[in-house]
Amino acid sequence: MYFSLVVPVFNRPDETRELLESLTASDYGKPFEVVIVEDGSTLRSDEVVAAFADRLDIRYFFKENSGPGDSRNFGMQKARGDYFLIFDSDCLIPPGYLSSVAEALASDYVDCFGGPDAAHESFTDIQKAINFTMTSFLTTGGVRGGSEKLDKFQPRSFNMGLSRRAFEASGGFGDIHPGEDPDLSIRLWKMGFRTRLVSQAFVYHKRRIDWRKFYIQVGKFGKVRPILDQWYPEYAKLTYFFPSIFLLGFITAVLLVFFDIPWMLYLYEAYFVLLFVAAAIETRRLLIAFFALIAVTVQFYGYGSGFIRSFVLVRILRRDPRRVFPTLFFKR
Image 1 (cartoon, rainbow, N blue to C red):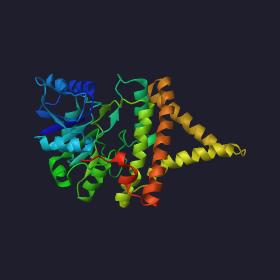
Image 2: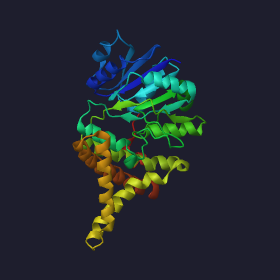
Image 3: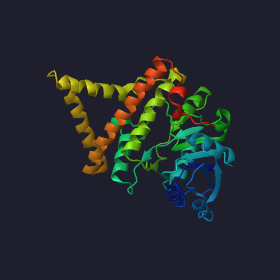
Image 4: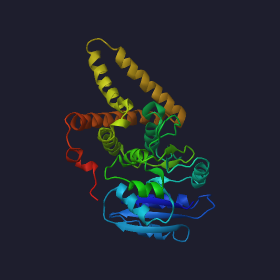
């Protein structure tokens, strides 16, 4: 099959350069194309793209800002391939990625797949800590880290494959962001398409964000989940409540200390010790393990508080998500 790599870009020419540089090292023996979609950036990547024209089959498009989901749809409409591989601009692609995908689809074809993310050795300590918290079984259940124990995998759009047939049937991504990727996965399931995890098709996802941006990001993740559960109640899971339960439990544990009931707080202390040890073993750095504790705290508080607020407004009070959370929706 012919792969079209689709990458939406917004004000990230340096990251675009690094991603394209990684693609030049691909060991894939067949032709593929790269489609860069500039989503209304003020810092454009056209000169960066032009510098790779002699090494990659690459095309560049500029459009008005309408969000990453709509930009991916735009790129797939312009692409020539029959299978689209979608990346975020802050990813580095390993040399064997395309070969791994081709082999996986040849042995067990699906119209939509997702791959995990990993931390590159060049990442900063904070980037590695955030990567650990986003991929560890102790924090997210390994959803982003390559766990094969999921009955239906919901690919994430930083590393996703989608056939042209599935794109044309579904219309691609919706206008919600974040959350456009699980929304697409569920719509594909309802149409009879199958998704799965291709664990060997990993990318290095840089996530160039500081603690504040990470808090805002995970807060949006928390707000989006009750909205998706409202849209697709048959796919709602109790596990989506866990970060909020963790947050409320921690607040309760602290309050109980004032009543001379410390055992619940001891459980949280044990969890964080276990987390620190796991992060230290995986990353082999005590500083990264310490940063991982900060990242997990930010993750659970941001996601948990966002989830609670959205659950109350959207699920209990039945407010219109587009009115109470207008920043989660892009105008096309």
